[in-house]
Length: 327
Image 1: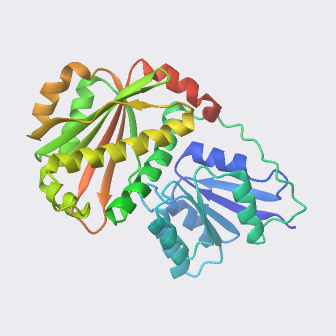
Image 2: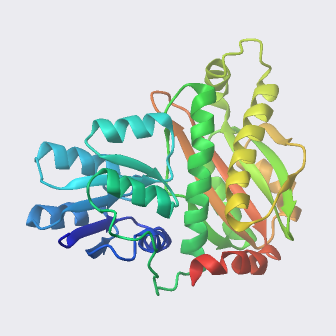
Image 3: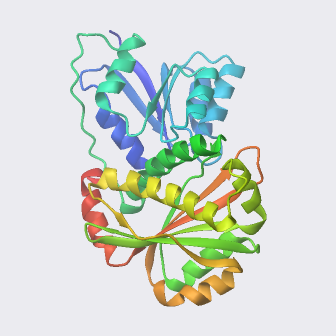
């Protein structure tokens, strides 16, 4: 089999490293890596790219837009999507746009091999032995990709419950001092009145609090989507918070080998401004590893923000748990 020109397009260093590790070691392939959809299209337009392995959630031009451009311009390049967005609708859309296959992150070497073989890109003379990757990954990039995968799993569950397509962001991962955290919360609020649901978690020495911020103007529409007209607002918010927070934490826990125990969700402030929420909870928020995920529901003016706030004492343990991914 002649060498194949493979282009990997993903904004995460860790995701690209994991994909390289999953490729069959004996596969004659020349690999090029890019971080943006625009870069991928530029190389494909120049010619010589046989196969594109593409992420969906990227800054600027996302994977859907890349696939649409490949189809529109009739560019002769096969495409496989490898994504954390595992919603049924996401899979349907990428296949409709011309992708030959969809693989969930992180790519399982056996599944990847079987997919490549089914497309005639590898043959049975190539052994399924994965190759190494010597690149060292930083903590923030590694944890962002872990969160990205967990976020995608949670969105798939939420999409089934609500019957809508969830538009996923690129998660923000930052280590924030208490003042910076307050600023981030104020920015998330966008000046609206909101209600926040808080749920503590701990496992394997790693602890923190999850905050789900709902904008009051959107609560009644959320209740309608939950298909329960008799829902009291707080009951609906607590149920939805428990579902989304549990799914995200479970996705993280599965990847780092811990089990989180969760406290009961609590309403921090109903119809309160973000300033009031900060004032009430300032003693509990110190220097923290803050993860921000802003969910949007397609076709609805509904947005809500999930914040995972890991304690400062958790950072060293998280780094050790991620070491196998980073090295």
